[in-house]
Amino acid sequence: MARDAVAEVRDRTEIVDLVSNYVQLKKTGRSFKGLCPFHQEKTPSFIVFPESGNFHCFGCGRGGDIFTFYMGVERVEFREALQELAKRAGIELVNAPSLPPEVDAHRNRLIELNELAAAYYANVLRNTATGSAGRDVLAQRGVSTEIAERFGLGFAPDGDALGRYLNQRDVDPSLAAEAGLLSERESGGYRDRFRNRLLFPIRTKEGRVVGFGGRALGDAIPKYLNSPQSVIFDKSTLLFGLDLAQDSIRRDDQVVIVEGYMDAIAAHQFGYANVVAAMGTAVTEQQIGLVKRSSRNIVLALDADAAGQGATVRSLEMLPGALDQELTPIGAERDANRPRAETMIIWQRRFKSQISIVRLPEGKDPDELIRRDPGSWSTVVASAQPFLDFYIDAALSAVGRADAPAKAAAVRRLIPLLEAAGDQVVQAHYAGIIARKLQLPESSVLRELRRSAVRTTAPRTSRVALPATATRSSNEDHLLALLLRHRAICQHVLPLVPLEILGDARNRELLRVLLDPEIPLTMAAEMIVAGLDDAVADHAEVLLERLEQTPPQYPGQIERDARRALIRLEKERFDYLMSQLQSSIAAAEETDDLEALSDLRQQLSALYERHRQFYPPPSPYFRDTRDGDRTQAASGR
Image 1 (cartoon, rainbow, N blue to C red):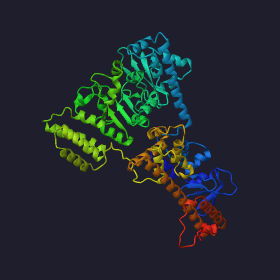
Image 2 (image 1 turned 180 degrees about the vertical axis):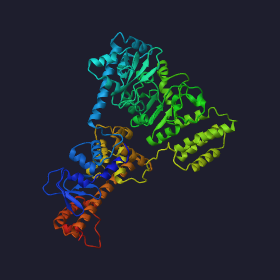
Image 3 (image 1 turned 90 degrees about the horizontal axis):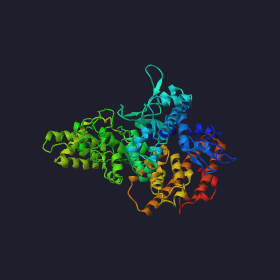
Image 4 (image 1 turned 135 degrees about the vertical axis):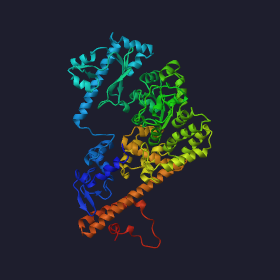
C-alpha cells in the first residue's frame, strides 16, 4: 500500500459532496451545517468545514475527516472505507485491487479446483496402493505421517487419474488446465500435468491452495515440476509453508528462508516452525514483503552447493552479474532480471529489515543438517552474517593480496553496494573492512567512493527513493507514536485520549487497537503493527520511524511527554474549531445572514464553555468580558 494513497483519496474527495449523501446541509458562511447523523438532535450542530476537509458536531463531539465520517455512517472498518472512497475517487489501490465480481468468482473457482486436486492427491498418498511409492520416499527421507498431513502432501499417480476424477465431477477440462492441473495434448484432449510425482501443495498465507510443486520419482525430467504461472499462481510471490509458519515467525521475531520443500518440512518436523521455503528461486522482493510485517529479522539459509568460500549458498544468485565465475553458484545461470546485491541493500533500507546469510557446512543442505543433528540448527542460524559482511567476504575471498589490478577491480565492484547502503557511517565502516582485507589505506577506498558519487549524474535504476521523514511530526502523530512504542509506560494516558480529537482516521484505528484490553501491554510495537491493515500499518511505521529520531527519554519523561502532547492536541483542536467558526461568522456578517450568525455564535459560545481550560489567564490591567455577555464575547464584538 503506497503511503500516499490515503492522502490522495483525501485530496480527491470533497467532504461536502460525501456528507451530502447522508445529511441535508445548509451553507452558513464558509461552512455547512446540518443535523448530526451520529446522535438525535432537533437543532443542527453538525458543521462541515470544506476548506480543511473536516467535520465537527458541537452536540456530541464527533469529528474527523472523510474516512472518519464514512466509517461512522456506514459502520465499516478503515480498510473498507479506504477501498470504497478510493473506488469513488477513481484511485486504484495497489495492494487492495477491487476485482470485478465475475473475475473474483473465476479466480476462486480455480483455487477451489486446486484444493479439490490437493484432497485427491493426499488421499492417494495416504490410503491407496498406488501411493505406496510416495510413502516409501517419505519414509526414506524421515518425514512423519503427522507432518505430511500438516503440509497436505500428496502423490500423483502415473497416467490420467486426476483427469478422470475431475471428469466424474463434471469439471470442464479447459478450466482444469487453466488451474494448472491438466495439460493440453498436441493431438487434442488433455492429460494430467503431474504424473508419478510426490506433490507439495503451495498455499497462500491464508492457507488457500493455488498450485503444486511435484518431485519426480526415479530419473524423470525435470526433477521438480511446478504449476504453470497463472492468474492464481506466481511462484515469485509465494513462500512455501508461510501459512503454517506465521505464528512462530511473530513469536520468535525471526524468519528463516530455505530453498527447498524438504528443507522447510524437516525444520517444522523438528520444532523450527519459523522456516519457509523460496521453492528454488532467488528470493524476490515480493517474498521479502510477505514476511516483513511478521518480523524484520530475515535469515537466508539456502543450499551450500557452490564451490569456494565465496559461494557457500545459492543466495549468490542475487549478487551483481559482474562477479567472477568463482562466485557463480553451480547450476545457476546468469539472469539480468534477478535481484542483485544492491537491490538487497535497498530492501533492508526500505523494509527496515536485517537480512542475514547462514553459512551452512559445505555439502550440507538444511534438510540433511537438521535430520542428522536437530539441535545444531539453532546454532547455525544464530551464526548468520549480515548480508553486507557476507557479500564482502565472498567477493574478496579469491583476490590475491599481491594482485593490484584485482584489488582495484574488487573495490570498484563493491562501491555500488556501499553507495546503496546510503548511511555515511555505514559506508565508512565497510570501507574500513574492505581496506583491511585488501591491505589498502582506508582513504583509498573512501576516495573511490567519493569519485563514484561524483561520476553518478543520474539515479541508479536499482535505487528506490525513500520518503523524506519530517523533522517534526504533528502533536497528534507524536502522541500516537508514544502510545504505540511505550504502551505500558503510557497506560494511564491511553484512556484519556478521546477518539474524536484525532483528525486522522488512521490514528483513530490505531488508538482503538491500543485500547484493546485483549492485547498485552508488554506486546512490542512491531508485533502490534504486524496485525494492522496495510494502510494503517504503513502509517504506524512512519510514526515509529519519526519517533526514533527523537532523543531517548526515561519512563517518567515519556509519560509526561505523552500528557503534554495530549494537552497540546486538545488546544490545537480548540483553536482550529475557533478559527473555523470565526471565519464562518465573518463570512455570514458580510452577507448579513442573520440566521447563520445566530447559529454560529451559539456554537462558538458552546465551544467556549466546553473548553474553559484554554482561556487566557485574566489580565490585571483590563476588564475581563468573558463573564459578561457570552454572545457578545463569542462574536468577537
